[in-house]
Image 1 (cartoon, chains in turn cyan, purple):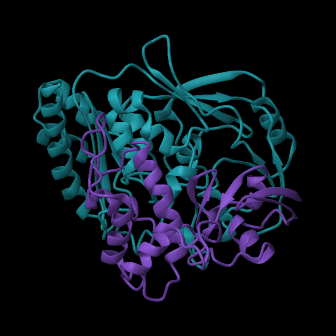
Image 2: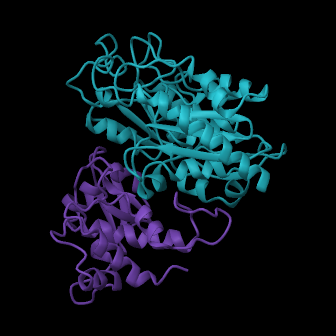
Image 3: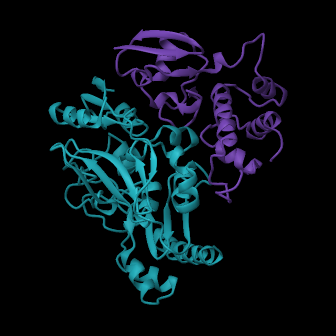
Length: 318
Length: 168
């Protein structure tokens, strides 16, 4: 790990101010991804602003009938929250399918969203990676790309965003609240937080420097069933090869793109009366493979209709 | 940087390099080598300790993040003269071979049993709104963050089950 200075933020405004005024600073939440990357010297901040104890860990009702989840609520607390379990079960299911109990106890809501989009070449500092070292090339394009993206990738990067939680949040049409360096708070759809790689895969999100995520807001739960399904090489504690979150008529896919992937074409097809199989076929018209990840297209074409049917069954049973 | 952590009931003040992980502070500075460094990347669970009663990977946390926290390590759970019930259970069930993962397994199990008592769900939980039925599938899923290279998993399940009681 490279040397860095450390401060514990006392309020959100102070944290944002410190981030703007200190060169090469980063916010530290639970640290489960950032510290791991710092050990490998993939992340090399020279100042850490610990926001882990800011009073932003609550899960509250909103006037609109949704929930406001504080940025520092741990993954475990969100998954275990009675309001989340009863009204947004897809969110609980997604969270508990990710990481281990120890990691979920430490990982925060904002930190989960801001974990780095990645692949094995991003982690291997002896290999080229445009995300880690812009302009160095992409080792995955013609390399070990079994778990690479099939949607929205570029010639510069085919890495995937690893979050399960974010996939459920996208299907639930969540929005993100941030505090900006100007002192203003702003809110925008979670769908707009993460970027596709294009020519600048070193950037994972559209946040401006110093912006701090303060909360994730859920609208009222949609009508219809909810379900999260994840396929992976081991039954537990493994990254997904593909996953799907169904929330009423909304569908999001995980481990298939540089960001949580809202399957808008599939949703539109479903809304106009297509069968689940036809709907996912419409989505997959936009998919492309890089060799070893071609199996994901077949996997998605089977996984998603099954999940939609199961969620519909639950919706009818409720 | 000055950091005060209560470890196994005793307040300890350390002047640490900010880079020092909680794991290294425990092992190298506080002479508590019971907590083990396996992968040092949060993948194996050997470094699991309880922080304010909650299990975490001590390798993925900085000591300075824990100023004011209460940490329990394997040394705070029982002694050679007076084993904790879960330590005796690991002996009785022969739940290890080399023993390197065992402190992490035991700390993780204690944290995990509290999570079950608090009715936290896992991916094996089918009824998210009811009381958890603590089956062996639940137990295995909840312990998946602790790897045992000697593969003593059946005995580890038996040891934890022996102190947890049957599935509710």
